[in-house]
Figure 1: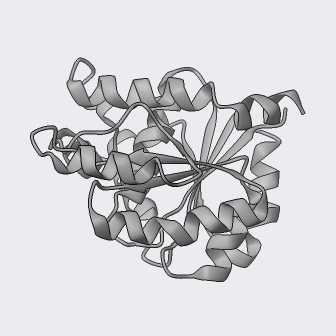
Figure 2: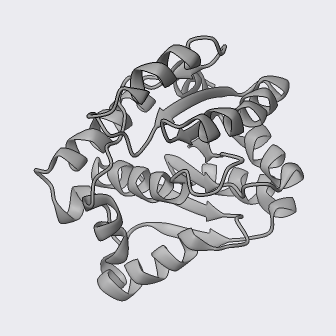
Length: 218
């Protein structure tokens, strides 16, 4: 088995990086895939979420997790990729060297971005790093409020960048952080919710990406 490695990276903190990592991991797991997560962010938010998951599910939790230093990432990720269908890496913001290793190791990089000028500007270095490393990147619009005109403005600006943008965005919904508090994902806590439909749609889109198809073929 050679699993696909997905890195969640964004230079700006607060863009929803860990939430995307956890929600995607659980959604893939619930679809029948085997999944491992790796946390190299010193803040350790994904690790704290995993601890809450273990407390809630105990032996019923099938997700495997490790927290390591970034310099150990490549070896750990490749080891996991031999045993799991998907490896999800939560990369640190601002740590250029470790984030670069995480991007280099991945088959696909997901860049969560809130529809704001600050997030747009902060995404540029991550996009550039992905291009420099030859890793396919995809912007995931997160915490989208459909009532504001800013979304259309940001969407137009994104078209100027040479990067793929996920068709499926994630809304600004309480369900996401509420499920995180329980150590779970929205597909577990609110299966029929709009949030669950969003993350399922994103998962399906990610699975169809050329980067993951090529990785599977290899």
